[in-house]
Length: 122
Image 1: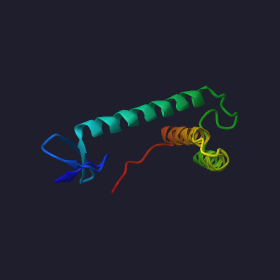
Image 2: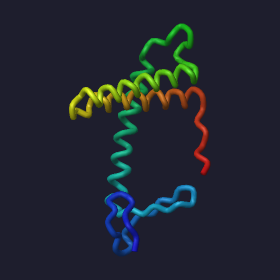
Image 3: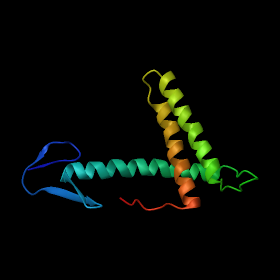
Image 4: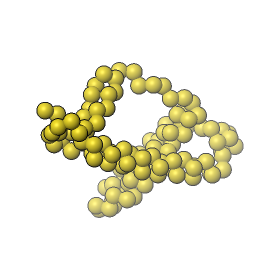
């Protein structure tokens, strides 16, 4: 018997999707796998919108739109601190801290676009 890696319920029969990553197998109900992928694609689309917005910002004269890795890390820390502060002060409204986390994701992706992205080696 297999457990679905998404909903944690037992998978009966042969209607499942297997996903392998570096030798580790994850098993999903077909509907759960589709839900997981759809959800991820929606999130990636919103991060892509953030990146498009960031590209419209006028570039700093010192870096001409390509900040150094160090500058990117400082910006990541700034917006992560902002997300923490907003989580504490938003009193159950998750939108403000999630807005800052979307910015963090966009900045991290911009850094990887500009400076390279090493593969995950396990």
